[in-house]
Image (cartoon, rainbow, N blue to C red):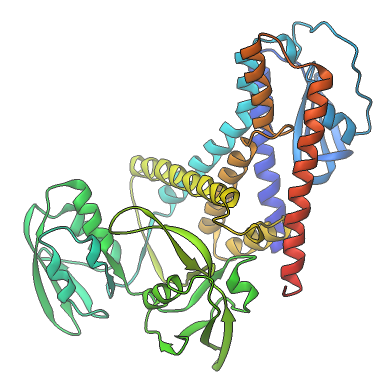
Length: 452
């Protein structure tokens, strides 16, 4: 399952990226000599028209070879020679086109990856629906973000079951949140059972205040681990999917929110977790790594502990129209892009340890885990990874798309392109940087596999 899932993820997303370059090149009349999935020596292929379509030996990327595009690094990978002789660009050569056309071709791969993510998120919601917790059991009330007039919600007992909001019965948590978001402005009653209680709150008119009200209440989630992130403190500490958390440093745990709160407060501290696995009580020691979160009260970024796990939760899917699915797909694409950009920022500034980086091994494990959870989870993972590829490709490192765009920006400012020798020199530097990152990431995975 893991191997097949990895091949599908890499194959599809590399194809989507290179298809963007290919289609953009054709749209501005550039000759496309080769469309390759994979790098290095050719394994299989065929020629149609002016273009050779091939599968290459190293499945860690791909490329579109265009007439007149001085991709010296790729020539060297393929064992070809690089000429420094001046040349006159032809009408269908890449370097014979205006800067805007070349920028369009270089950017198209990233654009296609982002469009794929948007389409995948939209399709998942449009086909399956928006996932919600199946329960109506109350798990958390975040008092710090409750709007004025709704403070009475803190009187509700954690673990009780919400049965009505504004006189309307609710059957799953999505209906609880929707009722709070759409209730008429003014007094609204929230009713629970086990224990029976009823509180009246003043629903605000402001849309942002309503959003805070709905997000302040979280459903009950059992402290059972669903997914363990590869290379995470949890995996290094020996935690597994299906483990039930019983205690954190001797403090008994009743639901996931208790567990999360205790871990957040134990940043970089060795923490003993008591767990139940297959009917046995075990202890595991993990050290929460530094993570960035938004303070629910102020919205400011704060540093908290995290071990890289998500809970197992029974879900139901609320069917929505395709118009709402499009909005959801866009919002999710923007949100995940921000998360990935923030991760890279923290990686550079030291907010996140370089040990968090993973290689093809990590990608494979994550692909396998996502595939095991169902097609909706697998497509969502592919969307996330597609955004990751897009953001990474925009880094201003020569041989990446961002590096080529940087060369074009320099050409636009100085009025002439960098010389072949200059581009080759910087491309070699970029190649070394990328190889160094790949070796580091692979080393992290190897150390993790050996428990280090």
